[in-house]
Length: 181
Ligand code: GNR
Ligand code: NI
Image (cartoon, rainbow, N blue to C red; front, top):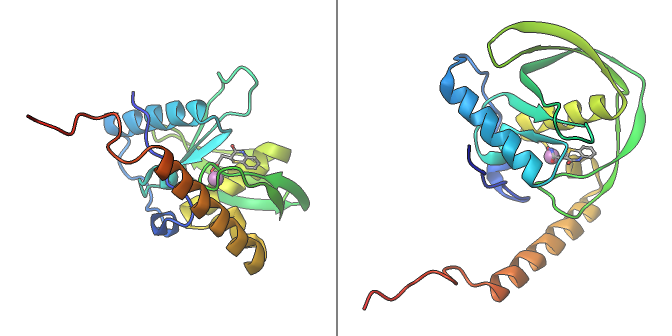
């Protein structure tokens, strides 16, 4: 398994619409393993393939305290929505930013598992919120899109500044041998 790099807002690749998974093979298993490892390391409660620059309809989630109950949802489709509530959300692609988003509190979902088996199930509360957040990623949508233009602009500037400060502290290539003589 391997850690994958998580794309960060406003990277335009996060705006890509993901394509359905049609082949359930060993390379899909490798991608799932890498995504779980990346999500656990981050750490986060969910990760969409879009965030690691793979534009397939695949998300992984784990809300357990022990981080040992992964949920893998492939080609997820919402069949029914119920209720509405605001939840404070965060996103690994928008690090350090948290704000409220209004979403359905219960959803009925059809999805495939890693073997291609289709099933339907109902999800509620934070799990339902997380699934909707991840499915937005597959459409190229981010939780900051629900905020005002003013907030989004402020977030973009803050992340830009943090990236510049990080680059100044650790220039690209630092720690690597650049001389060959
Ligand atoms: O780690 C995450 N926490 C979270 C909190 C509230 C609502 C959604 C999420 S998902 C997020 C990980 C992530 O960015 N997934 O795309
Ligand atoms: Ni996210």
